[in-house]
Each structure stands twice: as structure tokens, then as C-alpha cells.
Length: 199
Image 1 (cartoon, rainbow, N blue to C red):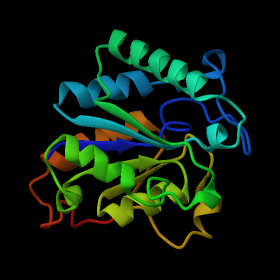
Image 2 (image 1 turned 135 degrees about the vertical axis):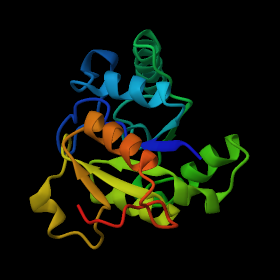
Image 3 (image 1 turned 90 degrees about the horizontal axis):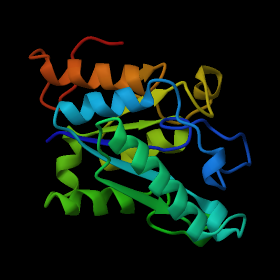
Image 4 (image 1 turned 90 degrees about the vertical axis):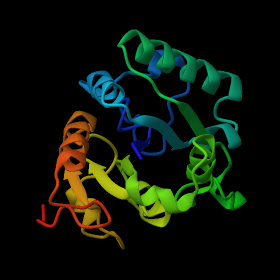
């Protein structure tokens, strides 16, 4: 099953800063090579889903309408680059709401799999790319292979304090895409799809 789950801010577009949100289209800036990475994955036949926490809506920092405009802008440019994001799943609830869709919970991962007529057991063949511990926890909770991208909020210093460890560490989404294609073409993998050699 060719499926990749992506966080948004810090993976596809520039991370706005701690405690800040991308609140309007003019604040949304694609990271270098992210569109090329999406095209690479699209051309290789992967289903791509964005799974992102956007609590700024629930907090009243910006509106659902603004979020929808940002998503439309992102999708427009992704399509223009010859790539495809199958669906975008947001959790707009505040962290205190206990929503099952808010990462590191996996409600939105399950929704994405249901679109493909798959269940959570199939997630072990999928990849989850994120820039924070929360993303890696979400990927682990879903059973995905996890990739930590150093292009966003957290770095290797943060990772030293994490309770989990990613399966792979890359510089950005482009490197993640190259790694995914290499991993899935490598015959020397164990039954969970991971290479035997450490990285």
C-alpha cells in the first residue's frame, strides 16, 4: 500500500514559529523542494494525506474560512506542480478538548485509510512524515514507519528529550520522498517494511 501521511507546517510550508499559526494565505510559504517532493511521490503512485493540528481555529485566532482558503491555495499550487494531495485532514480543536482526531491520536489517520477502503492494520505499510514529537507519536500510534524532518519546529536537540524515536531522520520532505522510494524498492527489508540496517 503506497500511502504517505504528512504534517503540514514545517514539512510542506514554513513553520510560523512557536505559539504562532499560519492565519492567512499570504503567510503560507512552501518550503524549498516540498512541491518537487510531492510530485515525486505522486509520480510514484503514492496516496498523500495531510494530517495537521490547527488549534488556532478552536482558539479563535483565525477562522475556518481562512483555513479553507489556505488549503485551497496549497492545493492549487500542488496541482500546478503536477502533484496531488488526496485529502487534507485538520483537527481544529483546542488541546483541552480531548478530540480523537488531534495528534498524537490517530482519528484522522483512520479517516484517510477509510477513503482507501483500508483499516488501521494497513498503516504498517505507510509512512508518516512530521517535524515534531507529536507527529512521530501519531505515526507510531498508527503503526506507520516514521520520518522526522528537520525543516520545521523541532531539531535533534529536542529529540533527545522525546519518549519515542523516529525510524528515520531527514533534512526535509524532498529527502523523505527519496528515502521512501528507496525503502520501498529495497528487497532487503523485514516483514514490517523497514530495512535491516540502521540509519
